[in-house]
Amino acid sequence: MNKNKVINNIKKPIIKDINHFNSELKDNLKSNVKMINTIVGYLIKTKGKQFRAILSILCSRLSGKTPNNLTYLSAITVEILHVATLLHDDVVDDSDIRRGWPTINKIWKNKLSILVGDYLFSKSLHNISQLNDFNCISTLSEISKRLSEGEIMQIEKAINKEMTEEEYYKMIADKTASLISASCYLGYYSNNKDEEKCNAIKNFGEYLGIAYQIKDDIFDIVGNIDNTGKKSNLDLKKNMLTLPFIYCLSQLQENDKKIFLRKIKKSSNQSNISEIKSMVSELGGLEYAQKKIQDFSDLAKKELSKFENSVFKDSLLLAIDFNMDRKF
Image (cartoon, rainbow, N blue to C red; front, side):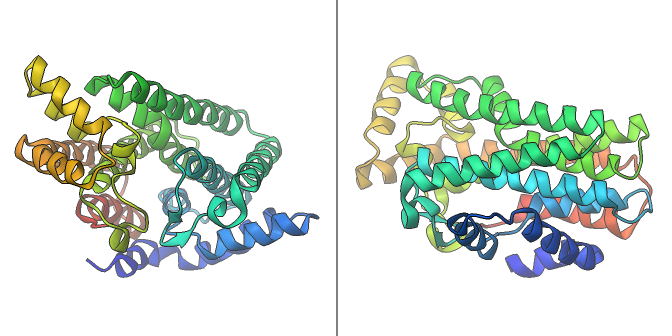
């Protein structure tokens, strides 16, 4: 699968909208501080897929209307929130690479990375205040809380080295799916206030977001820097239990669980990493995680079936398939 080709196909019906979005995003992030503009310019240059913004604008088009100021401001705010979380994540995870480029903390060190992340959060708060719509403000305020709770819950569970499958879904729903769900909801809501359809598109985003994070967690085990744009095994090194590991632990007896967890704790050793990868594969962890991606993707498609057929709906369906099949 050619990543750029698929992304271009997904955003083909809204290419002019995306170009306008990028122009508005650049203007929105301007600062009187030169250092901020330099780092933000680097972030825009290495912006990645802009998956959430694409989803937001596609959803705004589902009702047959063109994006408006509320659409763009909502999409910009969600994108800024996403990038801010990535800056802080890279500091927490001590990451050197993001999307195939050196991270902000690698180039400008942790202090500036955190401060620019704070600047982006403050910009998102300013944008929220400009929305003048209670539902939009409530949605963005709620996801800001969920993002933090999800990340802290992951760290807490990593320390305890305990996490149930239900807790895992709650954690990734908060730290990843909440933002994707909000992107879809705010996009659609900006053009159509129908409560049933708004709930459907919100659920679509939540299910897609959960499937998206499970896929990323698979890459953390089997991926490499050439096709994911970041180092693999990062969560493993941080002792963070993701779905493939959780499933494997559920298949082991108590003594074998302790051995498996000890190997994860010592996973900085390359031979341990290779052995753990083999164990995860043999115990069916990867296969189980892939099945769950299919399950959540099917739920996302069911929510989309409530909308009339259009090229924009086709692109959203393609986004689901893209996630299921992606190798990066």
